[in-house]
Length: 185
Length: 137
Image 1 (cartoon, rainbow over the protein chains, first blue to last red):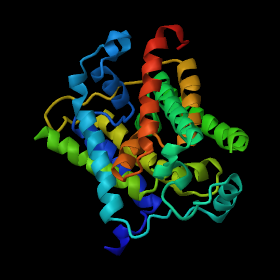
Image 2: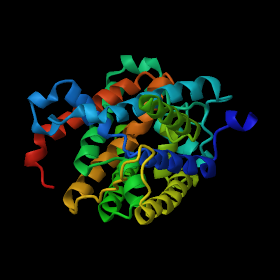
Image 3: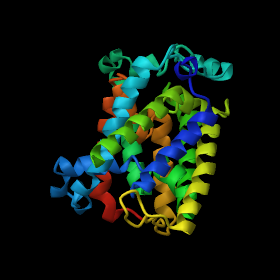
Image 4: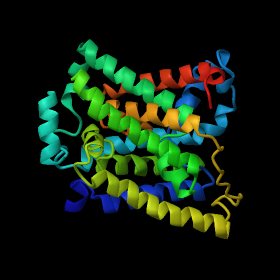
């Protein structure tokens, strides 16, 4: 029980992610989480504006159910399976984040500066979250997949396009953290 | 019955995302600072086993649990869409600190500002749909 309440090490977590993909493949489906965003747009009526959203979204219901389950899993894990929610990031990382003004580094699961409810009253924070999300949604569809679809599923299938996408993920992430963070924080 | 299976797979995945801390903004930042092995270990071990599993499926061609053929499609060959889309995704991943899977997980964990990130992601998906024909792929 004690092991469950602690953060799970990489050598447990990684194989369990591979297991998630394996189960979905054996169910005849795919492991790809960002497709749900397109499905939700279609349900909301985006098909009126663009052909990209005119498809049979009912065939994608299974994936929405997986996403809904992921939310339930997040609730269960956070509420019942975690003794201390603080993420033990390295001392170097804490120092760098403190210098950028993230005082919650090393003491919380998510930076309270962004993800506590006080974020709703900070226009700058809302704009950052909205823009970050926008890039994730736009980029995932442009690249045809996200971390699950390309970095896990696509690379497992030894796809060169997925390798290009994953190199892009890292190029973008490194640019953001090393060049843009110092400008905006 | 099928729906319950998908729901349980999702619950399992959500628990793994939260407990692995792959859903933590801090872990993503730390990864891009190369300050810890944690995220590389997660992605690397998932990928190593994923390759073995996927190649096994492609060679042995097992039927799915429901008796259908399992199709593992190749990605369409191109460069621009993967390089440009991937880079934009990476910029957002590092800023919002969450990729699509963890986004759903974080709603459940009660970090409500993630709803703003999800709204942004839906908006980004919608704008891509509008611009698709104009963008180089």
